[in-house]
Length: 331
Image (cartoon, helix red, strand yellow):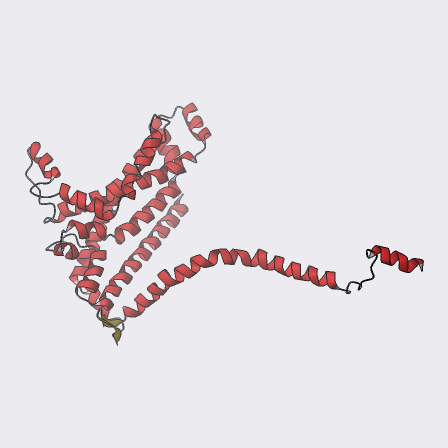
């Protein structure tokens, strides 16, 4: 009797069903399973949207473009494809326009990238000092990057206009003859490179500035104690400290130069913009791709140009890795 009374008190004065044996163990196992799914599956769930978007807008177009490059297909009839294997690549290899566009891409890339990165490095070095209004200049350096390529190209096109442009007016004020910036090869490439330099110098400068601020201050103090001047501190402390960032900006600039399209297209002011001038004097690979696909309606050849641009970037990357490995061996 006492035993039953005690059990009744334990259960709140009411007799109820006793708990099922093993219930707590099943709950623990279920909790452990959910915990493992949370720990192991959550990272995949977080990165899944990126891979979905990448597969839809990058990987699939890449594979489909490679498939189109092996066919003869026109823009108006994309569903009608004629298998030609590597004929498009052979024709592109024998096409003088391709080699001209490749050479123009390389020259414009060099003319725009080298001064751009050197100016960005110097600008970042100046912004690294604690001067008055440094925050304003840091923000102002991003304004060209935030400006659309269309607006920037239109403004510079008017500046480089042959008859009424401000650049020729300034040259005439110091005794030089007007330059036909659009019709002549090298002036046109210099003008296009100027647009690229103006848009991207500030962006690269901020990348360099962020890397410079991560360099420990004791390195500069040790160099100053050893009697190093500001220039030697810059060349022996700053530049080696941001070497990885410099390589990163070189890679970005190389990719941008290979894909250069908007600046020369708008600079041509009309039909000449697609062909890169009347004599293709500033036609880049991006313009050649557009001309083949959306002017000549040959999507197969256009896809072939796109893959040639991709292979060019792969070769540049392999060359960079080879040079880095050779430097590592010699050092």
